Length: 261
Image (cartoon, rainbow, N blue to C red):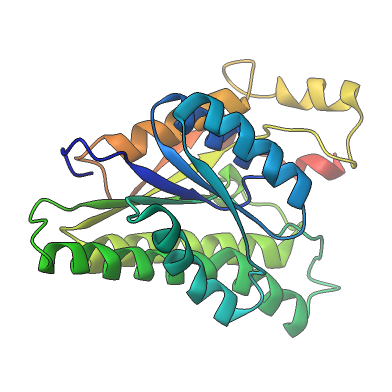
């Protein structure tokens, strides 16, 4: 990031709810202006904006459907128009729909690849172009950073959620390629949580049991993941790697996805 006194601005995708909201709030608490992306949860997005504004003094919400390439390409310019500049993108939004080798098909994979792989690449591309424009305009020390949310299951594979897993594996590979292609102006870092939040597929009791299945006796919390994202954004020497934040769950073998155990 630029060491100037100008407030730093970050776009957090999927920031209306759940993990994205936790990341947005942690960054706002750290002084970042937060652009809150959402797809359909407008009220939740406005609530996140209000909470971020209380912490950092500036936030705004931006809708975009990540299956629509035009909407994706327009998102960063919209954020820049509102805030005047953009320093970072956190790709937290994620499509997570179940399929396996028996139900796999083109449509499911294409849907996951659009949301989970292509969109983060296009947003990184747009950030890099914006940083280059700032350099050309005389801001010689302009820098940017991208954090991609991945998944410990890439290092601990099972046969569930095939299209989702393939799309996240492609994003992990894209992170390496982007780190090389966008250096030295833009850094790219992956953050891979373990089981962090429950879902409609898990009871509270089951979630507590599964969350404890790790060498450390606990997996990641939203606060753990958000703190790691903030660290990745602010540490100027990290790029082209992934930080696993999972209590060591990737070191254990699970035959099924947590939601189906």
